[in-house]
Amino acid sequence: MPDLFTPLSLGDYTLKNRVVMAPLSRSRANSNGVPQPISAQYYRQRASAGLIIAEATATSPTGRGWINGPGIYTREQIAGWQQISEEVHRDEGVIFVQLWHMGAAVHPDFLGGNKPVSASQITLEGTLPTPIGRDRPFKQARSLSKTEIRKIIAEFAQAVKNAIAAGLDGIELHAANSFLIDQFTRDGSNLRTDEYGGSIDNRLRFLSEVTDAVCDAIGSGKVGIRLSPSNEIWQVKDSQYRDTYARAVELLNPLDLAYLHLLEPRPDSGHDIQTIDYQTPDLRQIYNGILISNGGHSAASAKQMILNGGSDAVSFGKPFIANPDLVERFRHGWPLNIGNRSTYYTNGPEGYIDYPTFTAEASSPV
Picture 1 (tube, rainbow, N blue to C red):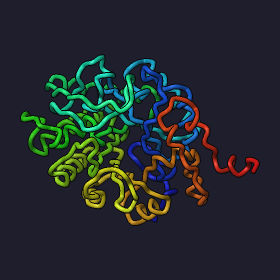
Picture 2: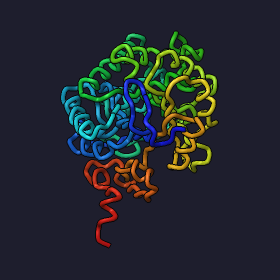
Picture 3: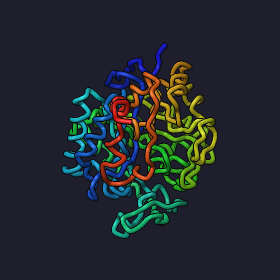
Picture 4: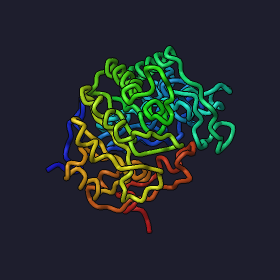
């Protein structure tokens, strides 16, 4: 029976183990969204993961609303990602990059005062930091025209080509966590009356068209997708959530993607995210391909998840921040470092590339 350390065939690749590094926004790019050399070191330190899914990365200037978050739409950004891919490959790692458009979550502070865009004219409930200050309330987004929708789909298709040009092994579409694709998917944020709104299939049209476009651009074996069926971040809700996400998975089945990545905190994980019903077991029965589970797992729960057939691999977020050698710590039962939350989104080496491996920790003076 497979376990965390059994190789896995995933799309165009064979992973050396089933421990996946989840995408983690860390705010270490420069103000123009260019990844810095320090990030190449960060990702290389974690290349023992079977798969690294690098942090959410904007496909266009209008979709970038995270302070010091990276993009992949300029030559300088592509060159920054090339440094990262080269370093990860030196240690025989496999690295995908997660691509997003933040939609209504982009504050006008990032857009020169212009309105953000979304499926509909909505205002998210909540705040994010911007270049002007912390805890800036979201502002009302405007509804995208069909011409603008086609432009954004084309930007996703170009971004995946840029990722491959940068030497990255593939991409993950960020269709989760109340960002643009998710804003189209849910009926609480998609109020459209044209072919992109109303019925479940219409609301899933944007997700389907983006996925088709990126698969056509680089091949489905280099494409994964992330969904968050039970999250209701910023009060972006869906009244038909079980039917909506079951149908989304049905539509993805024929595409032969590298994987489906479900972000869904387990009911017993002690999470603090506002969620609804846990759907991973049901969606596992529907999806025909490789499934990666993310949900506050420990090594023990991840091993059990794979052993029971609940998923093919498990991704870990916060444990990878503080443990560059997480795979070996899991393999040998070594204790884990605890991350320093105050440095998660700062812009320097502290709390980023200075966490010790277990060997270094054990050999340091007491």
